[in-house]
Each structure stands twice: as structure tokens, then as C-alpha cells.
Image (tube, rainbow, N blue to C red):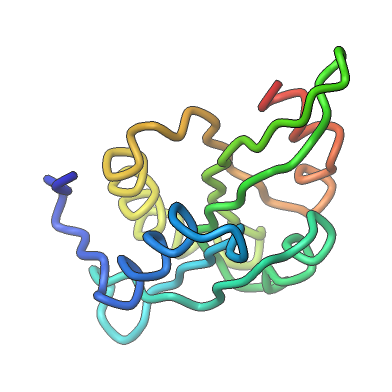
Amino acid sequence: MPVSSPIVLSQGALAALHHLRERREINTVVLRYGESPDVLLPDLEGNLTHDEMVRALPADEPRLALHSLCFATADGSRRNEPLLIMWMPRTAEGEESTYMAGFAALKEYLGDVHVHLTARRASQLEYRRLVALAG
């Protein structure tokens, strides 16, 4: 899917997103900006629990994350729902417009991801809250 914004996904970021979608052992990709404010780079790629994903987000730096949330529905069936998260701690608000552009580009690129959220503190990523959003 093409991205029409000026934000570019690096080859590493594209590969990480592809791995998440194609391999069961990858459920989380965290992206950051490098030297260039228009190129997103992979920061982390792995199979993380919900708690590990939250801990992997830096306390004072923004990130964009795609995480496949695993949960049980009310009828007991298992679901995996991809979440696109813009992590924007209050200490990083000066970078918000840059990350908003990346967030918008990822929403376009990942058109089948329907749960998008911005979180400024870890409590906004509480597991039950994410399940409610995804469910």
C-alpha cells in the first residue's frame, strides 16, 4: 500500500511490519525517527507480552508501535487485534507534530488496522482498556 505523505518507512521498518504480519513469533514493532525527521526506523521488533510492550516504550521519548493484542472475547474465543499506538509522553510534546505525521502515514499504510490510539502515560495502555477498544 503506498504512503502518500512525505513520511518514508525505511527498508528496516517495512521489513519489521512485514514480519509482524507474516510470522507468528513477531507481535510488536516499535518505530522511531532517526536523524531525518521524515524517515521511520525500527526501534524494536519482537514477541512481547502486553506488559513487556508497555515497558519497552521509553519514559521520555515518543514512539509509534504496532502491537497485536491477544485476548479472549466474552464467549471465550481467542482474538488477536492489531493496535496502532502513538506513544507521546508529556516530556516529548515538542515532537508531537512529527510523530502525528508518521502516525497518519502508518494509518494509511496499515489500512486494515482499525484501533488507533495516542497514549501519554502507561496507564492509558492498561490491558483491559486496550481489550475494550479492540473488542
